[in-house]
Image (tube, rainbow, N blue to C red; front, side, top):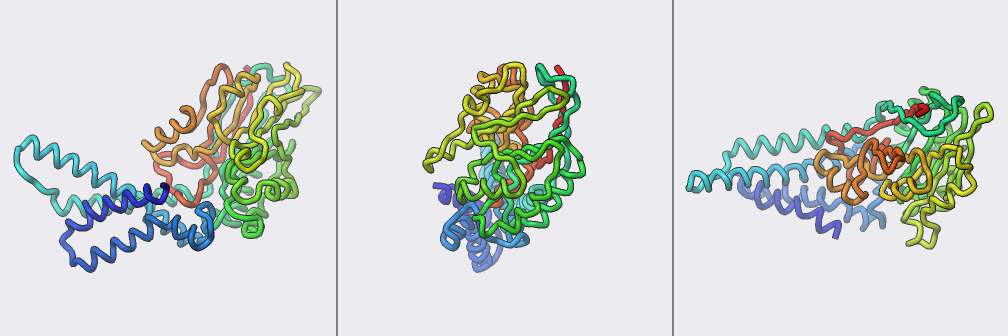
Length: 371
């Protein structure tokens, strides 16, 4: 189904954009073939590597393919909009009309330009985004406590060792109290990604680095990856919690597994188990890769939930579709029955659709305040 959907914009572009162009037929057929390869790059990756989630593609080639794939989708949208405008114009004027050739070339250049820019926005080392969150019952010792949330790093051919090292350097430069990683750290097997994720061992914070899985951990060997994260100096939270202490006061960091677990015979997320044993007066920060179950976390007394998974919707307009698949949660801060939910746009995103337009990546620094 995914590959059929990917072919739809290709069909629109070929039938409504390429064929009407005043160019030799062989040029139009050659362009159609190139665009078909771009549209079905995930299927080709599946044939070659056995997986669409981790195409072992060098960064320059991956950026080129993503730019062209994004341009193809945008061009299909622009062409449909132009067709709609022409249809309305013909109905109003009661005469047959065709779009001017210059308009076709302009929307083609616009789509290509946005595709290139969108990939550059997706592939960069993200800037720091600062937010403050008021926590009910936060002890004076934790006033101004600072956290960095990293999520959806998707370390891969597009986000290799050099990119990971730059993210680590930028994170460590913030000198925060704790680093919380909310899943989808990589794309690929441990054998293929070992060197690329190695810089994560350099992450440093006073109270430690905490990690939970995302859905992508389950695609490439859940337990080996989680054990490897521990070997890199991270504290694993799998439906469990840890305490941070300051001057006799405590703050709980809880974490759950991902809904992808049960389909592979592994435990799914269990917020009740994660927070079991935490005293009522201790504020809870919950790490949950997917935001859609936030109301359940609020019922368990969580003060702040940190999530990712949505990549912020990636493109303005498309974010509304992503929100519908995540119970309305897609990007930024939400008040969920008295609990604060923060959904990060992601430190990176899946290399199979690396495009950002109006939904920038972020390295999120969160400062806790007493309510």
